[in-house]
Image (cartoon, rainbow, N blue to C red; front, side, top):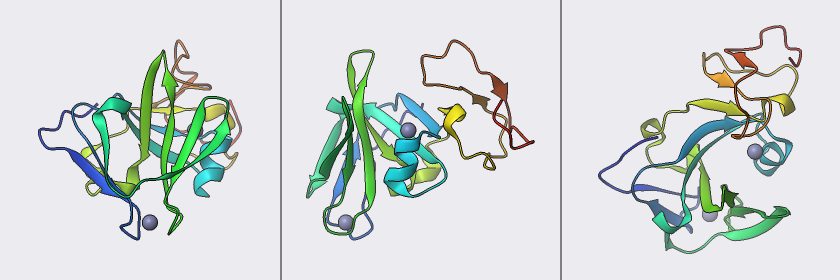
Length: 153
Ligand SMILES: [Zn+2]
Ligand SMILES: [Zn+2]
């Protein structure tokens, strides 16, 4: 939920793919789902999503893998950096970037955990953000702050 006067820029580790996004991000959150974790190899991913029409690939382009119906995953075909989650939310096409591909990840501050019900049992993050068991459509969080006993709530 960041309003930036300058575009948010980023790219892959080798520099072959560069992107920029303008305006306000629509979602900044940690996703614990199986697909995001497997796509990146990380225990959790942090995504910053923009309306797809606010995003421009300014150098090169990502390769796309269709990970499930309606969901695409973008990556650099040269260095393999995981770049995007792409799909629709409530009919709006979104592109969510993995936060560490931004040149200035500090500009994007997470507000929520989603798919917390799919997290790795022993893993949580020491913040006091709401945890949604499922996705952004969950009416309310099932937990606020870390689930410290390591067991799924
Ligand atoms: Zn690359
Ligand atoms: Zn995910």
